[in-house]
Image 1: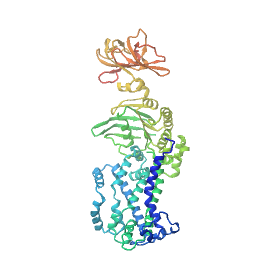
Image 2: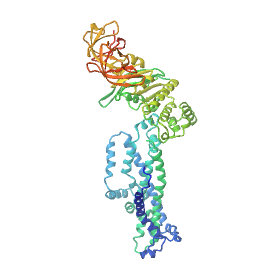
Image 3: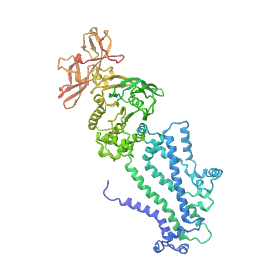
Image 4: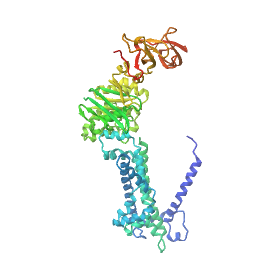
Length: 275
Length: 357
């Protein structure tokens, strides 16, 4: 290893950070200024710190169909349901594919695999029809269920599971662990670092959903924050840009918190894992 | 306290026969070591007894009870795996306790058993650690501990020493043997290492291509190998073989390399002209400078400290090894003799050991 700090690498990294941070900083600084000033295009990069109360004010802001705090909650539970649902379903399907010999096993595997090749947009009309037949339009299950089925996570879990040494499976058999007990006591703990990583990815994926929630919800009560922000800036009236920007910043926070919380988890899992 | 009996145990994977009907009976507390090269079916045999594979034919009796189709966890056997197979996310204590917990044993009893086993194996200080924080030797002991706490009728060892370094292996080998003798648990031990096999076994089963070529005590296997394969497999450096035909009415053999040698015993070994294979261990060859009947061209000397191993060829080009006390005679050509008392004879066709009837 080189002792000398690598200035070039640091410079490139810093530049990258600045590029990514700049729009967020503009939104943050803009949130503390008056809507009129922003509309004039006179947005300052220096935030007015005495106006930080705007973030609290934004929580109850309701330019869209529901107040911001409500939309944040809907988004949060939707993302949570999608992330947890995906992990549960994919882990179980991957468990079946990786550890059991049953008829049509490879057919099942390929069917799951093929769904990867179809982009969501292609599936969206039939999915809507199915949800409509099940009377799930404008319901929370309708919002989350179609997004839970996931070929990617299933494939990922399968790769993790087939890397588990056979000896471990056999040791569990000799210890008297049945399949579900093995799944719960050994397989899940052994893959918890991967689960944490997957949870982060899927939570952010769920949080950022736009097209499907837009189609499946018509009532304001199920509007997600992403839809809400879009609605806020499509009206005819004068847009309160400072509140919109504050809302945007608020909408960034939950995914960031999840990443931070889970990061510790999976780094800890990675360092003590012994496979 | 149990006997193990295998009756005609056979296993095929598709059309490949891995095990051709094995019969063996282990006495209470006996350690049978199964030794053989890779692919000889030794691991399959162990997995059949553990219940991880089901046999194509034959029966497994543990303590007289047929366990051929019993679930692995209900067979009352414990296995020590080659790579230990410890649960990486569980502490040493939890690893050892897991099987007992699943059996529904009371917590106090589990704790007592685990602590006893940990005491025996000097693991008491490590009970809270995860396997990732242990050295190879410690992990091996945890794997042993997991087997001991179950107080099984039968121990199964699947090459448990192959991941340890050479020095540790010798020590753990002795520890395993001491422990097995003290607990007096009937054991099956699979290895490809003949030294491990010789030192650990009450009896040895030498496997070759799915067949037990010989099942006998280590010394018996060494002194009277049942066939040419066993003779070449057991003993280090391995036995020399030279082609020969019987002569002098079956009392002598004419080597392909030239001279005739006398054969042990008074009786005839067979009809004159019968093709045989003569075997002699490198340490039994005698160097007789100038007077020995057989020439030996030295190609390489391997000094081993107290002795030396000479690699070379006989006059007919057959590879041959001699072990001599150090220092070895410094010559490129030697004359040697093959003492009759140390000769082994094998049928050149079948490879089976010949005995005087």
